[in-house]
Length: 208
Image (cartoon, rainbow, N blue to C red; front, side, top):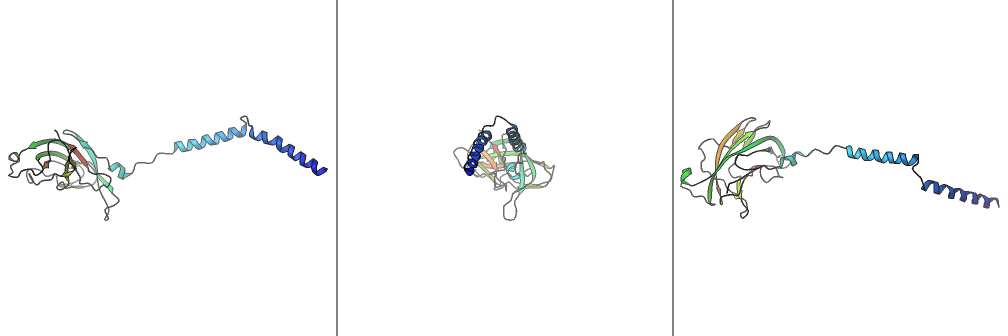
């Protein structure tokens, strides 16, 4: 009989406790829980965002028209051609882009692709380390109808200042390239970059 009474008492206590635990009306425990959740949420929101990687920032390619300037990242990879690292910054200004005939550039050669263009640029090292620029073999032209193709020529080499040289910090050169493009218009790209995430260091939109 006593055992039955004890079991009845325990059952009654459980029934009375369960509703109290499940039917809180904003007591001190709920307030503490809410404060803890808000604090955790605040910590998540206040975490600083990650800085963009050096490679990602290096991959921005300026697309320039005549009269415009743009800055691009110059760098190098390791001996395996991996792990691109920015070493300095270069600035390109497009001075002019003129379509010329063989006679106007004093050559007996005809353009193999269709049209000669004299592209005058100013290159300047605006960073803190030297940059070696070589344009021959890495100047490409393309438009909506023609895929990228080599536009480099040796026309005009030796006439005036050469863009192909080593630029120390603060140094600049204004010179021109005679390029062989398919037709008027399109885009010329300087593909002389080791950045695996960029198809070119800078691009120039030619006038139509």
